[in-house]
Amino acid sequence: MHIFKRHAFHWRQKSFILTSATGVILLALSVVANYFAGLYADNKMSNSVTDLILSNLPVVNVDPIFVEGFALFLLVVFALAFWEPKRIPFVLKSVALFIFVRSFFVILTHIGPFPVTSPVDGGFFTDKINFTGDLFFSGHTGLPFLMALTFWNNRLWRNIFLSATALFAATVLLGHLHYSIDVFGALFITFSIHNLALVFFKKDFELFEKIVSYEIRV
Image 1 (tube, rainbow, N blue to C red):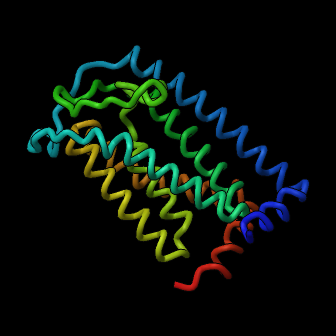
Image 2 (cartoon, one colour):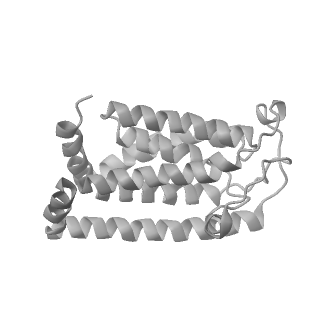
């Protein structure tokens, strides 16, 4: 019952409603930006290129991890935010910033996918947000790393999200779904995105940190 009390407490505050609504709007706009960036990249993409790692790795069918595994990761993030509503504004806004930045990178360079890749059957919804030419940088690698940075003061979830980062990085490489530069570049860019989020959404992160400071005793 404590979770309902927490939600009741926060959603009675106009400031919390406003900042959460802003996060929802930003996230929705970022998804739209990602969609059109992906369409543009698909339309402009050129040929594939060689890759030091992919050229020496056999293709592995990673469809279950790439699709269902990533869906489970997103569900976990949603559950963590829902469990402690103070996390909601910063998670929404930092993810939105991540998608906006990635959309910008997607429209800059349009390299075609590696010649042989793992089959991916994501269904109708996934097909609408995954494209062929939106390779740089890897969202499957970057988003778990962003959550690791966000939950850094929580040792348990930090390690879980770091493990997820390694898992999805290996997944997209073994499936030849991303070039190695997409994977390794995602770590550095995501680190910068997180630091930008700390500046842009300072009050939201302070609210987020209050949860870590008294709730985590790992």
